[in-house]
Length: 169
Length: 315
Image (cartoon, rainbow over all chains, first blue to last red; front, side):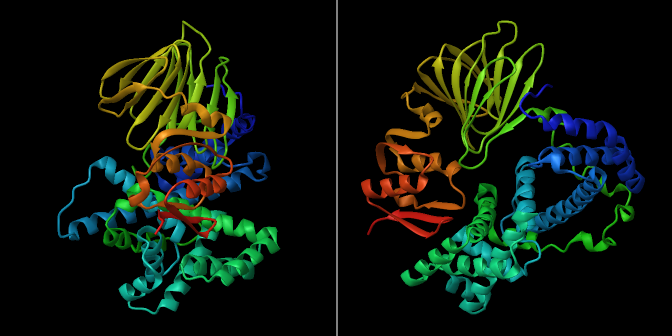
């Protein structure tokens, strides 16, 4: 599995040898399930590989723990979103039965948007998505949400700030 | 240095104003002045606009809005935790949650480019690989074969001869197998396109359909079927030189070719998507390309802001 392009892989390889078992154990101790602990530990190292500059890592174990914890939360959130999505399908006037593949794509997309807009109010999320996805004007959105146009503009300001923070994370 | 809250707030105010579609010429000029006043301003605007890329996802766009909003407003399980510790996790909850979404170490052979970035690589067997912008491939070379999995985007590969180890490019739609040759592969949402520059390649779709493609031919296929075998027009690999070259093609195709070179939203109105055109356009200066298009077609390009450009019929 040689990769000649990226010298970072060697460094992360050493980190992997040194800390993978430790991380599996740390996650496994609290989960009680070695199988999913290994999944999380593996995914954690994948995320480390994707970092722009792994040589800047000073505290490998602190970083690994932070990422692993984030993954655990992400797993929970994924489940929340999936449940809510299936609920919404059940409530739809025309019953829809997406395939498992379609469902998986939807959940991934939901998770990404959720991460982007996390923390905004329901109305701010709705305003932002009506504008970005459907091209509704601020006054059309105001009518739909029962708020003033200037309130919609404030929602957009909040949403853009949130976008900036999400891109920093 | 972290930009302070006030600057981020200002940037968000500008974005909201510019996207309202009601900014006056004076306000737009004021925005330009603000943006030029400090390099941090430009960076913050860029990062804010970067988030909009996520919303281009066709799956997301296809979701009924009620379903989308209902799902996003789902209460968070995270509240059930005391914050900040792994130690409060339940036992069975994680089983199957994350799943094995990725292969494990094989992903280490990943090569990728970002928006507006093209790169050339020499692979360990001596093959020359060029990646177009926003492309991701994973190399998996072993004693039996040289496998290149194209996850997204477009590549051009000049394969080094090795009769013992076939060179295989794989997309979600199928596999292309060669011994030594030069070809281009483009993975789209609905199909894969293969353009043969030298020699020949055998394609097997995921569903088992087979087709041999010779130099000078171009093949489109999806997971089930061979869609079309055509003469290649010789312009498909112009991106390697940073150009987009088309002869009598629809505007939508040119715009799709530009998308990997732009951040933010580039909206093309369906009423002009099918306009035909021919020409040679710079990829690395996509703003200029849009201006050139506007000059030669009955379209109007509206710059709401650098990350929100829409193309409509000229009235």
